[in-house]
Every structure is written in C-alpha cells, then in structure tokens.
Length: 165
Image (cartoon, rainbow, N blue to C red; front, side, top):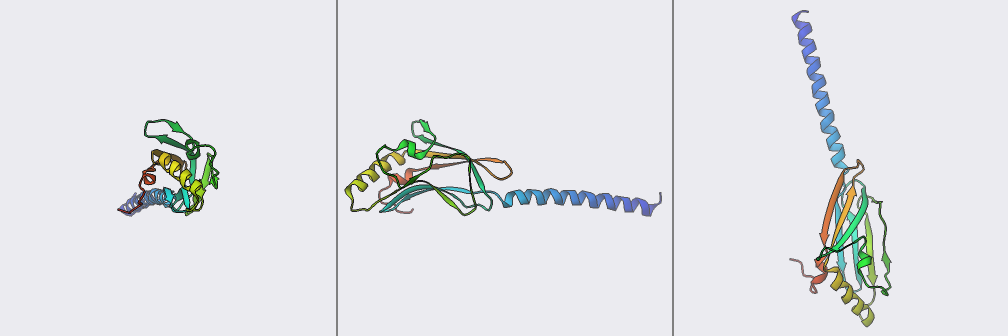
C-alpha cells in the first residue's frame, strides 16, 4: 500500500466520523425542535375565572397525569375535585393521557358570571380562597417519550388587586 492509498483511506475514515458526528447533532436538534413548553395559567377576571394549560412549545405535549396538592400535602387528581359541590361550572375537565398541540390551550376549569350577581361573587370568593392554596404538578412527555414535570402555584388567586410586579 503506497502513501496515496493510505492517505485516501485516512480521509475516507475521517469523513465517515464527521458524518456520524453531524448525524448525532442533527438528531439532537430535531428532538429539541419539537419540545413542548407548558404554561399553567390562572385567569381571574371580573366575569371569568379559569385555570388552563397552554403548550407554548413547537411540539405536542402528551399530558400523562396531573396532581393537585394543597399546602398541607393532601393530593387530588383534578382541580375541580378541590372545589365545593353545587357550583355550576361552565367547563371542567377530568381527563388523563391527552395531547395538547403547539400553541393550544386546554381549560381545566372555567367559571363565568356577571360581577353584579351576588351569587356569582360569593362563589368566586369561595373558589379563590381554595385555589390560592393549590399547587398543580403536570407530568407530561414529548413525542419521543422523554418525561418532564412542570409545577405551578396558584397563589395568583390570593391577590385581590392582581397588580403585576
């Protein structure tokens, strides 16, 4: 084997190594480019109170389960399970193993009414007093099966003024 053959073989092996390295980098980039990015939103307006999950990422978020705990460590599976019976909710969800597409929001709980309605205001105060002490933990995966955990404290409901700091 002469020098040119050895040099050709060395260059070919180097090219294969560089190609494999680029393949690993591209595969890692592809996984990160479709990563979900959750946000649990606490919404408390005059005529609408709700808790929602939004996927701000570029890939679908597969919600495996949710755990809602209070400050004492007691746990329930859904937000609505913590709230008093007898309130007529506009919407609530008790679901596990569902997907949220990118830039889509799923409401977990919605209560609407008129701010001039005394019954609505009283129920809203009761719900706020309960929601402010809850912490939501969301267990989810991306499309590749990588597991993530996201936690959100609903203390936003404690602040009557809702001033942004």
